[in-house]
Image 1 (cartoon, rainbow, N blue to C red):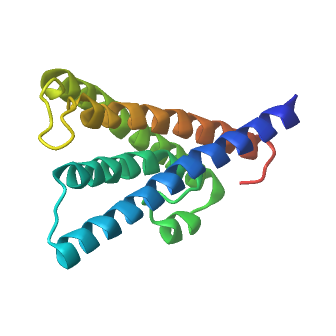
Image 2: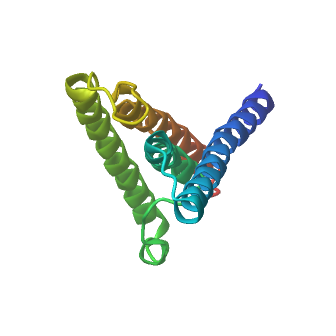
Length: 163
């Protein structure tokens, strides 16, 4: 059963990363198209500019979970690694707690902001800003799931004495 969850987790991680990679590639293609259209043909697309902003916001917040899972979030490893193992474990759990608090605050205020201002219609794509503002609580919630997965893996490493 453990192997099943390990395989499922790896598959979900690949899918999660693939969505982020696709969004980055889409944004790059759109930016190149917009720049060529603007500077070579003097054509500007209001919808394209707004779509690029939307995809940029998506990749930024989607990347929260990817950074957590791949251990690429901001922390000072050289100081933590110099600490004795018991202290390092306490610092790691403190690190997890700080990330959880930040994500919960982002979810709370992101949802409130989306509820308050999400009904406004965008100028370019003519869609409610709910779709852009809603990315904040959604992606932070996914990041929260990722941090709990990370905590579970860390506890398993401590149990197996591999940290």
